[in-house]
Image 1 (cartoon, rainbow, N blue to C red):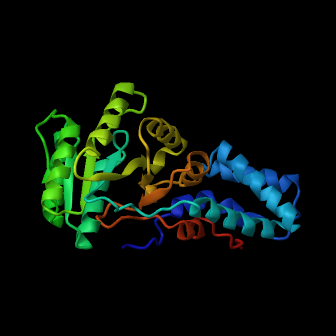
Image 2: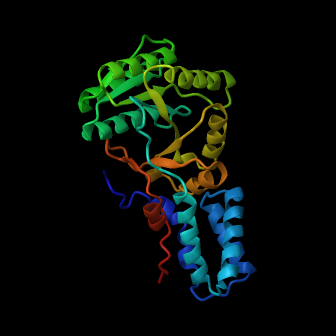
Image 3: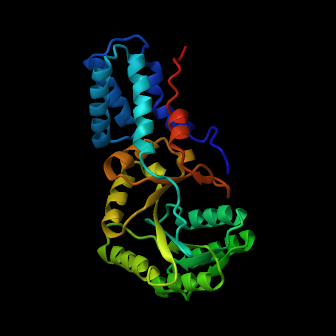
Length: 301
């Protein structure tokens, strides 16, 4: 898998305030206010920031920390811990496993399905793609191209067909062909439209009635929308049992702080992140590497 290098530079810049803090300044209200403001500006969000500050103050008091440098070191560890408390591994415990990709329009669902198919096919897994976005012909065409290029198989229905039946058929086909993984695309839907969200419930319910097991329901979010993505996640979580989040377009966003808001407010793990447009640019999320990359606390000259 590809490694992160400079793709998180935009997010790192939003956290660069911390590198400008004086290393030996005292721990006082001014410092706490500066840290709070910096986290909010980095798109961590007000609620998550308040929780982070509260825990940070309690721990710093317990450890009797007296300089800003020690506080920032503690902040880095706390942010790592807030992300590491979740299992970020993708669940392949079904026979076959069914991973359903959900989200609003334009976030990169179909592309994410295709990139995961490429990744898993390269690991010699037999993969079946389910073209569950039956309202957008281009989605099936896009998946078909990726299926052909990576050796996966595609099950699709007629335009406007019931997406639940397409995904069910794909699961049955995968079981018959001894494929281990079904990747199910779904149509983009506004989280404010109750009828579309109910359809999503049906898709997951019907998929579980077949030979396979839905082991992942992955919400695809566009990192560039920042805190708006948090509301999307809340709404989708009310309709289906989200098991993880794919955060796309992180390479072009300065709003990667949303990751901490999701962890603090929703307790949903980030499982994959998109760091580019290439077919290998969707990678497993590593909390340790992410925090180290964006929180460069080296003092600027």
